[in-house]
Image (cartoon, rainbow, N blue to C red; front, side):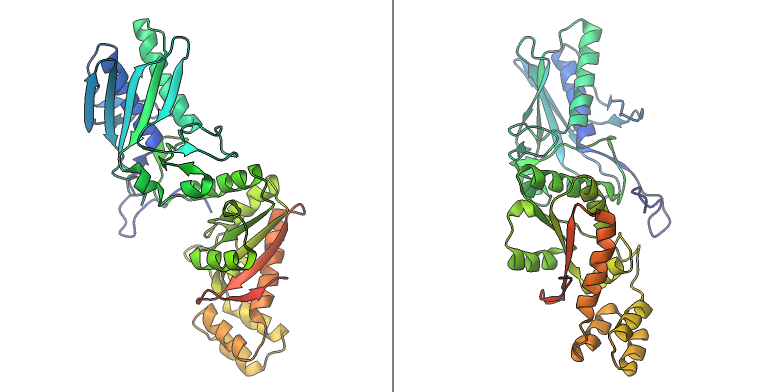
Length: 366
């Protein structure tokens, strides 16, 4: 599946794209620095994104004092259900130490990195490399136009960011105190898979960096809790895989750990057993004939096999199989493991746990 967004809403209207926190911080930096250098707050303020687009941003807040200027922009994520949509992103600019160049600090609501494995060292503010590059570029551009040495300190804040961060992966990745300032293109694509897959990758990076050799990719909270009770692994081992089994497995092939356990509901793991790597209900479906054929291979009574072909859901088939002790969930787990193992490669050992709607493990590959 493409990581781009669908082109329209269900009502046929085009989806509106938005701007990343990194783009907002860059625009706020430009507006504030222009004021600090003796001009006005730029409002609206334009910036050039990595792809060449030149969006304009309206200022929501502006203030200046002795040796500083600060501007704020409300993030517009377009039609994407982004937790930071509507958040106020602030950039405070003040002179830095001579010869320091452009430096960055985490203000209120922006996190600090406490674990290795992320693109920045431990102790750094969670302002990602591309937003740093964008902010540095606008500082150097404005300073060059005025003949000023670009030694400035930029403090980025997000109002309410510490509370918003609890709804993200940041606590699990070891980013404490707030949000990350993100963005590689500056543009938020509505309903993109890219951000979720990016978070999975960073979770694997952190696990490897702290020496975790066994990770868990779960399709949801119920499955993750079942895996936690069974395996008792450290916090860094658990990846919020969601529907993106392929995104996790492909990255593990290039950045292997010794073992990965995939934990998920029966229907989603049926899709994996069928070879689907995107387990979302809108992008892959359970083949009930596949399950019926699997029951037949387990030598289940033909009446049940026939009923399975006419079932409404995968879980209905599972209930039939459990009633006769057929071991269907174990068979699905083994097939899902084999499909996943092909993607992960030989360096990673894959196993699978099937979890029912009560949170109980009902099938295992090993």
